[in-house]
Length: 299
Image 1 (cartoon, rainbow, N blue to C red):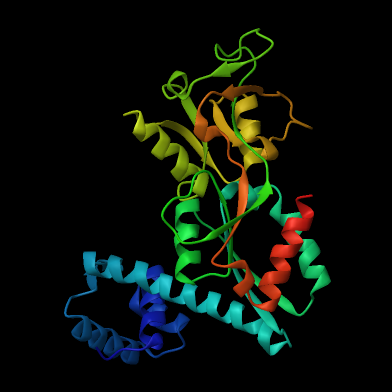
Image 2: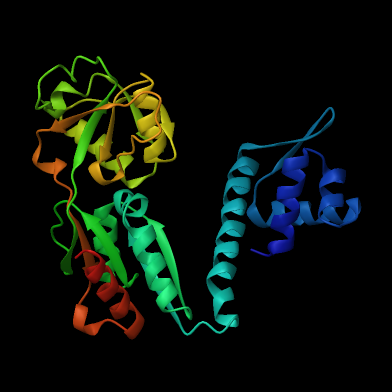
């Protein structure tokens, strides 16, 4: 197929402007040149991408597909540039690091900040993924270090203790599951029919909770999805629904309405965090130092 990044950038501009002339202007091309490039792009892909509309153009189904992929291409390019830029500034090492939602939103910000202060010539790419995916990526050598939670089976990896944690249910004050008992506990089956405040779709903990519900033959009633555990706590405290958060991420200070914490009586609620490496003794210098730092921070 004969097309290039200029063609893809032009196509995005036209799609966003919904007009070929305005899109060409945004891409710093003449309208005639833009029209010719789009025609060649359609020929290369073997499908029409744009359809004439009364006041511009609209995307065909193929065009909508290309737009999604083209945006992903440029997002990956930006990430590539971001990953490479530190090396131009004299960085001597780079660590590929994945972690689950819990670790990223609780312990890792402080622990990684300490590591990066100690090693200013090292950069870290940190991504959020579900624990099973992290274990597989470590085993395959795709990443250097991971932090996982829960039971990990099958992958040929080494696990090191990092932090003790567990998932808890939070409910609004006066909720039936909160009750008046001194020790508040509930099974997950008691919870799944209530409306939930959830972390965003695609987050590791969202995937985990949805899978846990599916194992019971249930679908979670998601009332709203938010971007942080702090927002989960605020929404639950305000009575929007119930939520499940790691105890380490529970935030109640400054909330107008404080949610009630209920223990989840399931084995999977124990979510101790562990450092995941392929083989500790085979780690490169800076990855080994990062593992040492995380172990020291865990006490």
